[in-house]
Structures are given as structure tokens and as C-alpha cells.
Image 1 (spheres, rainbow, N blue to C red):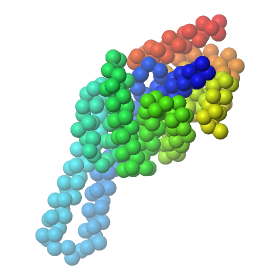
Image 2: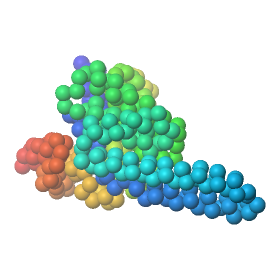
Image 3: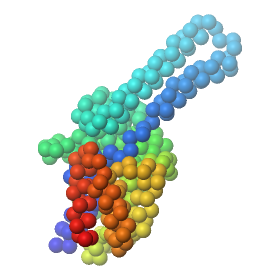
Length: 307
């Protein structure tokens, strides 16, 4: 029975940082348009540097070079347009349209396409009424895209973030031992994502959720984990609180689930006053998504228990 209880707990807590019923992590959507504008600018500046460095370049050579570089700039602009469209569809929760747009770039060598496709595949898998086998296929598909994104650019914070999330998802099909073993790797990639971009609130939230998951494990479940690993992952409510608060600091009220988790964390720390404050904020958060509605219900239930 302890093993079953532990499996259920780990499955819920590490399934995703977005919630147990399959709503994708949305959080902040202030994405990276300026990055792509800089890309086009960098291509142009490199062309200028090339010409300055080689003043004896023949007219024919220059014409060929000019065409190649102009083509590269055009492709950079096309990339920017596609990614802006993708980010817009994501902000509108147009999951299926987003997936169909990005899957056309599944063979791309560009991490910016790949991590978005990983996220879109995962969100597709979490749609209501998704057939079980297709759900599993999409989960693994998302992980492969995230893995490829990381291989193409290991300095892309979003690639690290979605690799961590997708790795956690696949663990549900690999058994408890693999799931717990993966949790070390998941934390490493979340920490790397935050190192690369300390202002990404969702990475901070997910790491806070990771800490909360292990902080709330009862003693008997810790014992089961200790049978599998000599030193199983562990954390504290205080550590989880640090990440949740930091996420709020960098992007206030960005995510209803972060407010709910702040309330739950303060409850775990026996601070009822602060718990009530954040649970009330979670309850009053505008319910734009199914997840927001679930957060509202959880917050109301917890506030009733607080009295």
C-alpha cells in the first residue's frame, strides 16, 4: 500500500508543473521577439564586417555573397514571423492550430522552433478526451523535440525548461524508480534555465513546484523512496516558498497556480494568515482557462477549511 500511495503522490506532483488534470503550463507569455529582430540585424552587420575586411572582393564575388546574405536575412524575417504567429496562437490557447503550424518545422535545426514544438506536443497530449495511446505518443514526441532543441542550443533557457517538463511526463510511463531518478535531472535543467534567464517566472514556478512536491512527502513515502535510492530527492517548504515568491517578484500575478501554491506552501508552514491572503488572491484570479477554474475551486475549498 505504501508503494501505491507513493506512486500516486509522485505521479501527481511530478506529472507537470501545470496541474493534475492536464492543462498546459501557460504562465507568462512575454516571449522573445526582440531576439529575432537582433538576429536579422546581426546578419546585416556581419555582411558589413565582411566587406570591410575584404576590400578587394570582386564584383562577381560580391554579387553572389550579397544574394546569399540577402536570402539569409529573408529567412530570418520569415522565422520571426512564424515564431510570432506561434506565440500568438499559444497566448490564445489555440493548441491544435499551434501544433499544426510548428510540426512543419519538426526537422528544423533551430532550437527556437523545437522547444516550442515540444511544448505544443505536450499541450496537445493534455487536451480533454485525448486517446491514451495518442497521448503517450505526443508525450514522447515532445520529449524528443525538447531533447533535440537542447542538442542544438544548450544555452537556450526554454529548451532546458521544456526538457525538464517533458522528461517528467515520460517518467509516468517508465515506473516509479525511473520517475524518481529523473527528478535529479529535472532539477538540474530547471536550475540551468533559471541561470540562463533569471526573469522567467514559469521556470521559477516549476522549480518551486518541484520543491513543494518533495517537501510534502509523508514519512512513510520517504521510506519507500529511500528503499529505491540511498539519498532520494528532498526539499523544504521554505525552499519552495523562495521560488514561488521570486516568480511573483519578476512577474506579479502572472499565473493563478503560483498564487495557489503560495497559499498551499504557507499552509504547510502553518502560517494561516499568509495562506489565506494568497488563497484569496487565487480565488479572485480572473478565470480565463480551465486551469484557472480548477485553481479557483481548490482555493475556495482550502479557504473553507481554514474557516
